[in-house]
Image 1 (tube, rainbow, N blue to C red):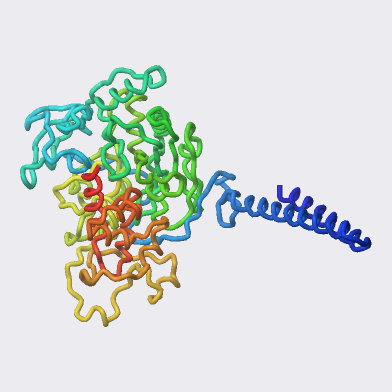
Image 2 (cartoon, rainbow, N blue to C red):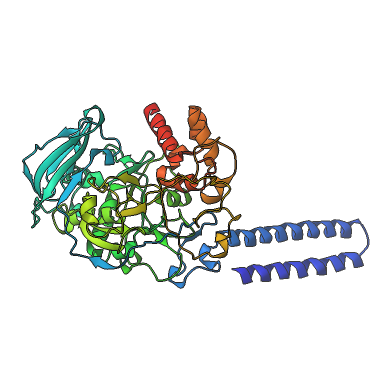
Length: 526
C-alpha cells in the first residue's frame, strides 16, 4: 500500500510539472485557466494521498513498532507509555508445591460486593457439606447461590459489626467429596437455561460486573467479557504457571462465557518480552486477543477495558480472573464445582516464597506454616498495592491468588525527612533508583509520613495509563459532585486501578478508599 501510494504520488507530480511547462509555453487566458485547474487538481490529489499515507500509519497495528516480541505475530497490540513497576524481593519461583496441607477454609460474604451484610445462611455449625453445596445467598438476589469450596464440617459462622456475617468456616475432609452436577451442554441449551445452571451451581459468583466491581446481575447481558492473562502487580503470580495442565477447563470456560454475552470475550495478553505466554492462552479459540506492553498497571483488566472497549456511563461488562475461568469450565468438564487454586506465597519475610496448590479461601496461618523468618510481619491477601490486611487466623479472599508477607513497619524515623533512609522503590528521579532499573527492594509497611494537604502534582497521570484525570476525580468525590464524577470517568475504575496512584501520592491520600466511597455513591444514585 505504501509503495503504491508513493508511485501514484510521483506520477501525479510528474503530470503536474509537465502540464505546468506546457501552460507556460502558451499565451492567453485559456492557458492560464488550464494551469489553475491542473494546479488545483494536483494539490487536491496530493493532499488526499498524504492523508491516506498518514491514515495508514495510524491504522498500522502496534506490532510494527520496535520492541515487541516475535510471538505477538502481527496481532493487535497496545503499547502503554505510562505506569511504574515496583520490584520487590520475595517473588514465588519454581514448581507448584503439592504437599502443603491446609485444613480450614472459609467463604466470606464481604468478598462479594453487592451482597447484603447479613445474607441468608443455609447451614449451621456442625453440618457436613460437600464441595459445591449451598452455603448462603443474598436475600435481595436469592437466585445467586454461594457454595462451599471444600467438603467437610461447618465449624463456625463468624459475625462482625452489627451482626454481619463475615465468615462461614469449614474444617476440610482429607479426601474431598463433591456435589455431583448433572451433565450440561451449553451448546444444546439456551442462554436462559445456562444462566439458571450457573446460578444454582455457584458458577455465577465467579462473574464480576463493571462498573462497581459487583457480583454480576443475572437480569443483565454484558456488552463484552474481559479476562487478563497476566498480572503486573508487585510479586504477582505468573499465570502461565497457574494455567499449566488446566487448558481444557480454561477453554471450556471461554466457550461458556461467549454464550453469555452479545459482544466478545477479550483476552488481555502479555507482550512484555521474555518467553511467550502459555500455549493455553496462545491457542485459546472463540476470543479476541489484545496484546499489552508496559509497566504496571498494564495487567489490570480495567486498563485493558479502557483501551479496547471502554465501559462509559451507560455500558456494562463482566470480568473474571484466569482461575475463575478454570473453575467455571470445570462445571462442564468435570461436572463439579472445583475451587482448586494455585496460590503464590510471596514476600521477603518468607524463608521460601513459592507456589502452592490448595482451594479458595485457605487459612493464612496454615499456608505459611514453618515458612516465616520472623513473627513481626503483616499478612496481605493479594498484592501490596490493593490487597487486604489479614491476621494469621483469617482466610484468603475468594478472588485472590496471592499471599504477601511484609515486615511490619511500626517504627518512627526521627527527622526522617532529613536523614537518608533505606533504599525503597519510588517514582521520583531525585533518588538514584532509576539508574538501577532491575534492582529489587525489601518491602515494609511504614508510610514514612502522614496524610497531608491534597496538592496538585500531576503524579497520578504519570503512572495511570488511562485518559482520566484521577486527582480531579478524587476531589469531585470528596465534594459529592456527581456530574463531575461521572464526566471524569469514575465508572471505568475500581480500587486496583488507582492503587499505583496511591503509591506515588505525595499527599499520602487513601485514594482507593475515596474511590470506593464514590462508586457506592454513584451506585446508590442508580
